Length: 314
Ligand code: UDP
Image (tube, rainbow, N blue to C red; front, side, top):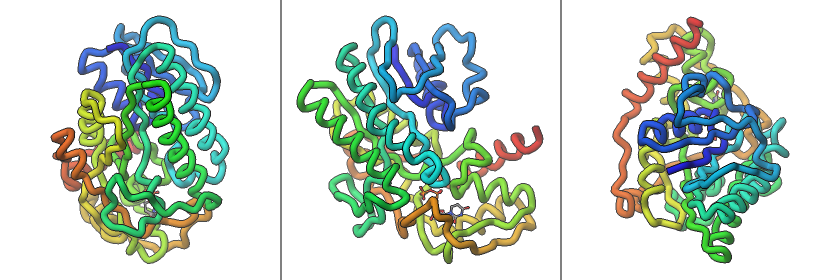
């Protein structure tokens, strides 16, 4: 297949480029490098299966030649960006999704939207299955991301219903791994780089809030199965390994052998209404895609820690 990957220079986008190239596909990577990084795709430059277009997908998109699939991954996704990049996040979720769907229609390409567990907001049901409608504050600090993705899902389904575009929607739960930025601001890159440099680990609040953490390789395997399926309804992809942020911090201190302490901090303003719990119900992915995560937290965190160690030595 010949495919366009928006946000292809980001953490997940660049791993997606690698996977699609390994599977024998032609990849056009589009990124404006707002949070994506050239070093994530440097190894692909010159590969005949790879083409890079430096472009902001909130504008009209032109791509020469046929396209079989559009994977719309572009968006800043870390809560630390919700304050400064709020308008950019709303634009890429809304305008960027509209432009990429328009391109899919014009090219008769299939379309995959990377949505998020944030559509469930601060959930009142636990675990979260795809038919839970969510508890989102539209005007809160997280609203810029949550509502952008909710709009993106609505637009994707409208193109499916009205124009017959063959769509997929994946709701991604917390994903981590190699190539996350040290300054990404999310819990795992913060804790790992703090532990490796002997700084205090910054646990926000009392650390009792939970997340369920998935290694990126499992996530991408699930997304690829979704692409090859005929499932048009949203599918949760995540690892149902749920852990409190305090236990996660302790685990990372133990795994790195660090002498760092754990320090409790007030939640930064950018994080808004921090969800207290998050756990994917992956019944749909298991039954419709025959997918389940394979990389446990010990293996996934070990690989991530090794990668951050090498980055810090540079
Ligand atoms: N968190 C934390 N310390 C940090 C970064 C994050 O305690 O240095 C907490 C944050 O308050 C949230 C959880 O870790 O409860 C996960 O936050 P993250 O930014 O990784 O992503 P989110 O799931 O909130 O989008």
